[in-house]
Length: 95
Picture 1: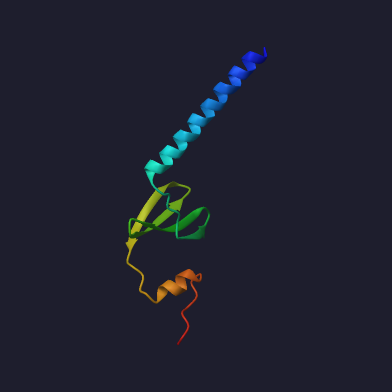
Picture 2: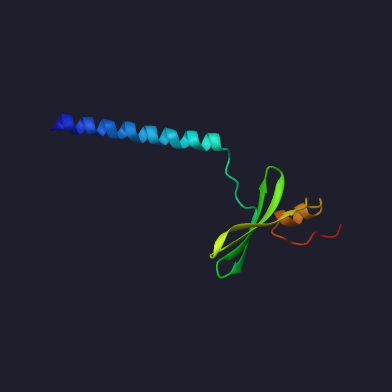
C-alpha cells in the first residue's frame, strides 16, 4: 500500500513539474505582458485604458456590453508632460 502511494505521489509531482515548466515556457515565448499605463473609470463598468505596445500609445474603451474597442492611437506626449504624467497628472511648476 505504501509503495502505491509513493508511486502516485511521484507521478503527481512529475506532472506538476511538467505543468509548471509548460507555463513558464509559454510566458517566455509570448513575451512580456503589458499593463495599462492609465485606467479611467467612467461608471457602470465602462473604462478607458491607455496602453503602450511596441512604441504606440492606444486608447481602448471597455464596457460590459461588448468586446474592447480601439478608439484611437494617441500622439506622443510633449516632453513637459512626462513630469505631470509621472506625478499623477499634476500641472508642471513654473521655473
